[in-house]
Image 1 (cartoon, protein in one colour):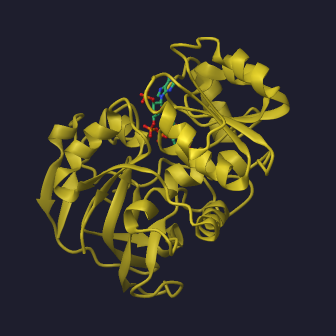
Image 2 (spheres, protein in one colour):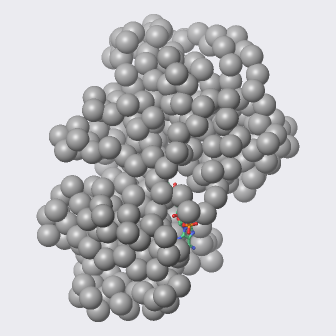
Length: 336
Ligand SMILES: NC(=O)c1ccc[n+]([C@@H]2O[C@H](COP(=O)([O-])OP(=O)(O)OC[C@H]3O[C@@H](n4cnc5c(N)ncnc54)[C@H](OP(=O)(O)O)[C@@H]3O)[C@@H](O)[C@H]2O)c1
């Protein structure tokens, strides 16, 4: 089989290497997945550029989020059968409730190889069934982007019909949050730092779209026009907390997700790891992931994909994910 490798020391997508490898065999408690799609998250750029998540001297199979079909089941992995369509979950070991102590960085980081391969072996308890209404590319966007948006929206201060939510940009997490919000009949508000995409968002049903170029004081404007939103899903980072706190209404929640503007790293670490209020949002529990799958099926939601790439074009997919102007997810597909 073929797989992509991020060799030790390489920090650019052009240095990724497509190589042949032996077929991996599932051990006890593991299954093998014939990979059909893998999606890229911003964290994969941080790993590529060695901002975090690299073990010195170790080659790494990159990416964490996969969708595919189980083609072999190891001993004691009876929860799954050959032919099941699955994705991984974002955080292994976090079933429900209080987050696990040791979050780790997930698949495709440090000493844990990722999923950018034709076949991967994963622990049976690291999987969830894929939504029936999604193709594999769409399903591969759930583990991190979908799960994190779900946690931000419903993990605390859940948004309900008639509620309101503000988010930033048009990346994977932000658009998931918008879709979940609209599906509930709540108002979504979006602030961009670009002038394009505004019409696309309005066409989706977003109540108000501002850009920070024309409306630098967007937080005050959101507060004025909405009376303060119930929730801000801050996909940018704690550097934006002053604005997020201005835009949110009384007793509302700022769900802090982003790792873009980390003016104050210790503050960010506390928020995300301990999930205190202002609530740091980190990934999703298996329960949240299952709830997300059900919600997607019931409402026939389809995650927004910016662009699909062939397996051979993984470096181009990385570059597209890092570029400004993204509208949804970048997915790498492996045809059956
Ligand atoms: N806490 C967690 O568990 C968790 C999980 C997933 C993601 N994250 C983090 O959340 C952030 C969003 O993730 P993603 O996967 O959705 O990213 P993404 O798909 O790469 O999307 C990036 C989006 O954010 C916008 N953006 C970036 N910096 C901005 C800024 N300073 N002001 C306004 N907009 C900005 C970009 O706008 P342009 O098009 O204008 O560049 C783009 O629309 C990342 O920092 C990621 O690491 C955290």
